[in-house]
Image (cartoon, rainbow, N blue to C red; front, side, top):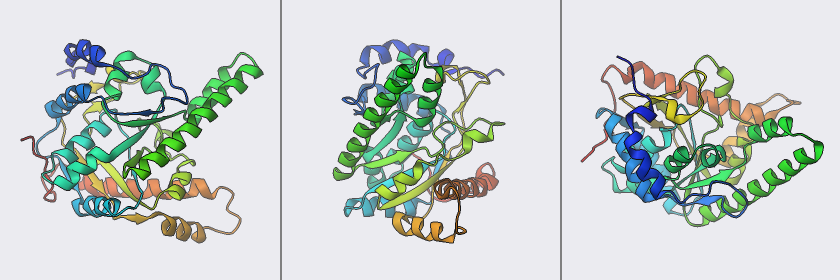
Length: 311
């Protein structure tokens, strides 16, 4: 049986999403912090609920709780998470909220995702989906490189670089405000969704090292299973195939960022040419090992006691 695309399965949502949409279609330094649009969040939750199998669960629940309790005590928190589809964030927050734990439900409300500009600027329906969640919008390095390459003149390239600098400086200030409010920053360290057969899409960005320097504690969250599959040759989320799946979001033990970073960098050979890239490569390796360990048992019915309730 052919799986439907998001466009085919949820076209009935599009009118309401568009009517409810309030997010900016163009990003500048004045609008990088975008609070969740809860009207559209209800529609996104429905998409997740329709396709999330009941045996889905949170792995390492005790680590999520430890992380949350330290946030409540005033530490600044960072979540570094694998990225396979545009439902990774919606499904993760849904599962935290429906975990049966008041603490994890509160954690879901504190999470602010770092998002690239294209979610706002490329497609009004994708923007309406994306604004269901609180975000700090950045100008990604990859996007800047592409835009500079396509610039018609050196002056145009410099203008784009200045625009990126202003947006990302505003984003840094917004993240600092988030920390002061006890909000948690969630980052996809690969900066893009993983595409099978394209290993470069699973490589961590060296810029992630700067996040480790900015936060007190972090957890690494692996993802097994996905509600969406990217259609080959199509970047548009609405063209992704959608299907039901058992999802597992699992947390590493809580990491003390400064200690973790200092100890790992000290283990590198003297004269290592790119320690920042080595640092994020190490993080991606931990995530990959965590992912593979869970995948061995995910479809066998073995799991910890962290099932999601839809009640």
